[in-house]
Length: 133
Image 1: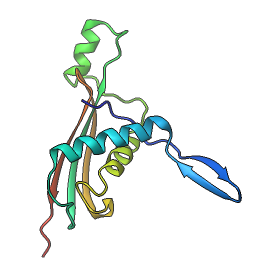
Image 2: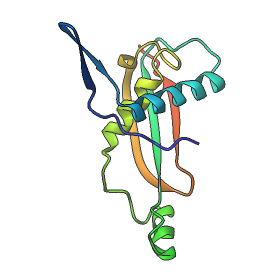
Image 3: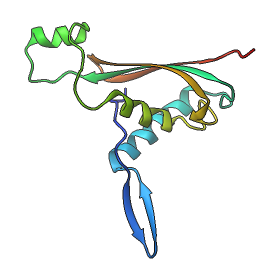
Image 4: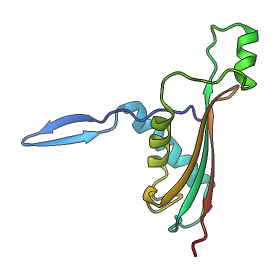
């Protein structure tokens, strides 16, 4: 199970006259882990049509909370209205699946995403091809 990691601003390094941008270490490792898991479970050609994606990001519950508060969060009665932002989770996760689930994330025309607490941190994804015409 993967703990969601938010996309962070790229870092920059100078090579002579040029500048190279790269992901921070934690983001790079997360994207690699997502890609590896996806390649193990998805054995088809990358999709190439319009796509609808549903995502649920389950964050870990803080250990310092009372048992009652932990249960409220796991039951969904207390939602994670804290950083990191949901859109940053989406960005890092979708980027990791580029070339595996789809040819390009520009193919995603519909997206529904949620951020929740869970006993086990994880990410759930559902991808559907959209019929056109």
